Length: 389
Image (cartoon, rainbow, N blue to C red; front, side):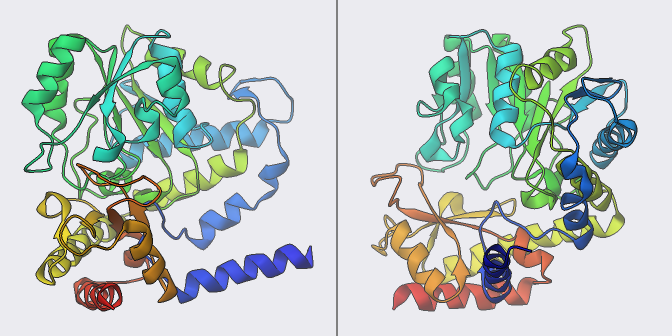
């Protein structure tokens, strides 16, 4: 192997082992996932879909993709014939883009949470392609409670009449009421899309409400709490609107070329793991750990945005809560001591996104490594000690 690259990879391996990962969008995959990801499937080009490829030699790749689709439906307790799933998106951003390309005419409105309140760039933010091709109708959280105000969202939706409403966030720690979002979408005639990228593993493990009863479209990354490789999936309800057909065309040939079959195989491995009984214990432990970590930080005087968490994710106000530490400064201080977090904007943000008022924490990765509630008490104490110095 290339010794220079090998040395750098080894360095990263050591870094991961010697530091504590509290980044909400990161996790540690199993050896089986890594084996599939580094397999000879890397060599195979598979433009198209099973049975309809543009290159020959697809005997095994077709079977792998079909198996991945079946495992995706099983992991989320969905029935074939009611839901379809595309497992080819290379990551979450192009997955969301593919949905809009398929279902939202150019220039139409996408209703999504604003970035500083916890939304994602691909929910129509102006710096993203999704905000350049379509018009975002933003919504946020209540100023006082810092949780979603569904009545306000309903009023905005009825007035603006967006083509699609996006629920699901990158920095919103609370449970989402998908039933209320369904009612809002019905009230204004919109498609309801749920981006469950952050909490997909919690849904699979029964530790977070499933959006599938109410959504028309569900997108997700395959890493984060789902504990798979970097990739994405798009689930679409099968009915007369032909969403699966439109989305397949948007992914290929509309947006991507050949899928990364090594990634698809690794996703299939992760989905099998997510359907196993022990994964339920893992998902519940992730949430339990997050709740304890939030409570312990709050006891030590740190303001927790929205007052707590219902998921793996915690948003800590390090600046406006009276501590006077910027998110970038907090992240840097913690990393020097081996605790890895990310700076993050908070609702009512007064600072630059490059040096915002808070940090985002997540418990998925440390839970994979065996952390329990007692460890969260120690982690909270360590964070408090480091940031107060």
